[in-house]
Length: 484
Ligand code: BG6
Image 1 (cartoon, rainbow, N blue to C red):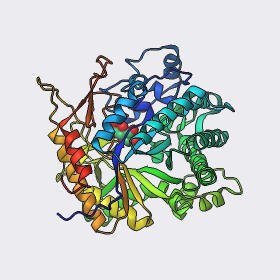
Image 2: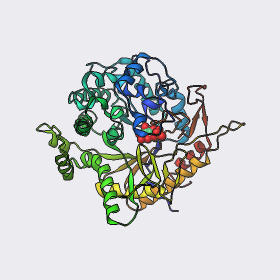
Image 3: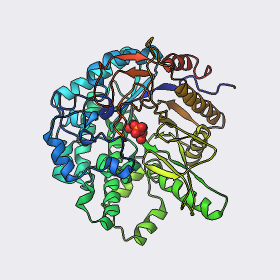
Image 4: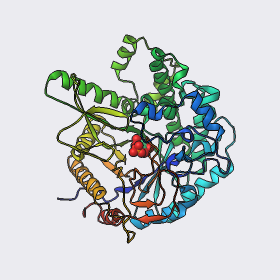
C-alpha cells in the first residue's frame, strides 16, 4: 500500500493524569472527582459504574484506601515520569498527549494562587519531554476537577466555574508557555450525559429526574463558554498556541436500509456532532433550540455568550475512536453490545474485544472522512486502541500480537483516509503505557506498548517492561507509517 502520511505527522501516545499519575494526595494535591471512582469490575450497568452518590462521596473522602479507588495510585507516573518518557523517546514519539490534574495546581479549585509543588511537577515533566524533543499535547480537564468545586458550588452547573477554569488556564498557559503549544480544554466533552459527575461535577441525586437533562445542558453550556474563553486567553498568552476540542466519535450505522433506521442513525450521529459543531463552527445547531423547546428545557445564556462561541472557535478537532455501533427503531430482543458507555445492536460483521467493544477499522476511516467533510479542519486522533489482558511469559516476554493487529488495521485505514483527502495531523493511541481503566478502574484492561507490573488490587512492583508492540510501534514511527 502506498504511504500517504505527511512528513511531519505527529506519532505518539496518550495518557491522562487521573489514570496514570497516582500520588493522589501528595505534594499538596487536592482530592478530585476521579479519586472517588470505585473499583467495580463486575458492574455491567454503565450508569452504575460511574454513579457517585453523596453517600459515596462521604465514605470516599474519609478513607485513604487506594485498592477500592485504583485511580489514586494509577501506574505511578508521578514517580516514574522520567523513566516513562525515556521509553516513549526510545519508541520515537514525536508527541505525548497527557493531562494536567487541575486539583494538583488548584487543590480546591477556587484559590487565587496555585500550588507551587503542582506547578513544579509539570515543569519537570515538560522539561523532560523537551530533552527528547517530544511535543506535549495537554488536556486541561480529563475526567478530573477538584471535588471542592462540586461540594461548594455544585460543579459546572454553576456559572462561577468558568472563572475558576480561566484562572487555572491563565496560570498553566503562563507557566508552561515555553513548553506547550498544543492544548485541549475538555476530554470527551460529550461524556457529560453519560457520567455527569466525572465530567462536570454534577451529583445526579440532587435533582429531580425530569430536571437533570436541563441541568446537564446548562453545565455543558458553561463548559462551552469556558472553553471558548480559554481559547481566547491562549492566543493572548501563547500567540502560536493551538487549541483543540475533543469528542468521543461514536459512529452509528443503521441496522437496515429502512429509512426509519437510517433517520435514527443520522440523528444519533448528529447528536454526537453537537459538541464539535459548537466548538468548531462556533454556534449551536438550530435543531437544538427546537429540541429544548419541545422538552421545556431552558438554558440560561448571558447576552454575549453566542458571540463568545462564534469568535473563539478551536484550531483543530481531536477525538477518540474505539468502535462503531448499530441502531434500529426495532431493537427489542436483539443482542446488544457496548463500550465507552454507549450501547447498540451487535454488528454481525465485526468481532469484539475481550471487553465487548466492537472492532471496526473501516469505521475509523468512515469517521475520519465524516469529520473532515463536515468541518474542513485539521483532525487529531488522540485516542484509539485495544484494551486487552496481557500474559507475561516465563522468559518475561509479552507477545501482544492482538494489539499489533488492531493498531495495524486502524493505521492502514488512517493512511487511506489521508489519501481520501482528510487532513489528519496526529495519532496518539490510548494508554501507551498500561494505566487504570476509566470505566471499570481495572489495571488488567491494558492498552500499552509498555507493561506495568501491577494487578487490579494494587499488588506489584510498578516496574516497566516493553511488550512486542513496543518494537513494532517504534518501527511504524521510524518508517512514518510505511512498515506495519
Ligand atoms: C476514553 C477516555 O473514553 O476511553 C479514556 O477518554 C479511557 O480516559 C478510554 O481510558 C478507554 O476506556 P477504558 O474504560 O477502557 O479505560
